[in-house]
Image (cartoon, rainbow, N blue to C red; front, top):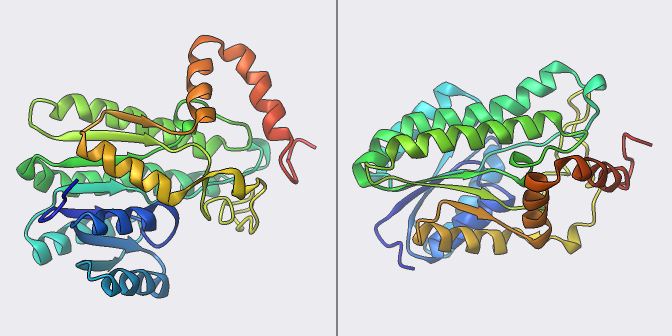
Length: 270
């Protein structure tokens, strides 16, 4: 898998799957563009990539900002003159019962996860059409099966899946590849930074992160799936089982999912 002379833009690349994707594509020879909202984290990640002699352009940008996404695309093309792969990775999670959830939290999750994907794809699409490249959406098993206390997160991922399914059909005759990735439970900081009902950061993961697939493993799967121009990538045995069962026995799965999520530390159901 040689990505030499390919330009890869990864949103939300300062931690987790995004950071791992930057390292994986860089190791495969790609020229990188990474974005993030935290200036220090962004520069730290860029420095780590430069230390490995990976070409990288860091761009300070908020995924939920239409203006930032437009500028991101413009700066990428001004710097490299092309764009071959867009990885829509930026995302946030939440954990609270809907009855308790501040609607501003719901909007923030949708702005980052869904609208951030729409904005980035909109402004990068002309360049990707020209290069006949790839658009990748980092979705979730929650894009196939909603889970309680994650209403906003599940809604954002379902919306992503529908958006990409429609877009894929629009561009399928134009040489553009669209990949939707559902990582399943992955060890990253997304649960630590998940928003509570009031919008505060959760601070601590309610699940055992040591038993999850690593971000690096996910990134390597994404690297291979992009190379093979796959349509969908559903990861982990648990994730694949959830997608399968939700298709055939969704009513039974309701109870299974409830019981599983109720076992989480500090579950809102108890």
